Structure formats: C-alpha cells, structure tokens
Image (cartoon, rainbow, N blue to C red; front, top):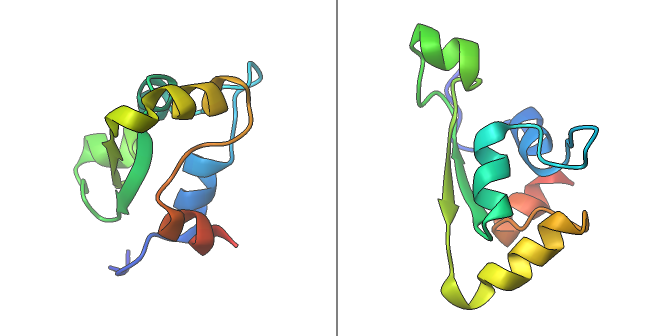
Length: 95
C-alpha cells in the first residue's frame, strides 16, 4: 500500500455516499456518529494496518466532530436522507 496525504476517493465515497437498503450509512461506526449529529471531520489512511484494521476498517480511521449548535441540524439532514455532513474540504474532494 502507498501512503498518501489525502484520503483516496474510494474512502470518501464509501463514507459520504454509500447507504444501506434502509438508507443509513453502510459503516456501523459512521451510522452511530452521523445518526447522533456529528460531522465527518477527517479520514486518516494507513492508520490501522493490523489484521483487524485490514479486516474491518479499510486500514483507515475517521474523526467525527460534534458541534453543539449543529447537532440537531446534522441529525435531521442525515435521518431524512439528505446528506452526510462532512467538513467542506472532504465534500469537495469527492468531486
């Protein structure tokens, strides 16, 4: 694997765009944090290259941030299927 300074598009796509058949984030950790009103703050590639990381976390780690004034708005946007709230720099990198 190659170290990179920015997360590969696949990671961003999986975390920001993919949904389960029920309309929830496909990743259970993302589902928990986004459902509770957090925003996706950062993606760290090559963060967990252990066997567990390879099996369960795509060798990446994600930071979520809870901004008190935005929690309800973020939660509503997520549960209504509108969008995954992420740091604008991450949203822009997906394009």
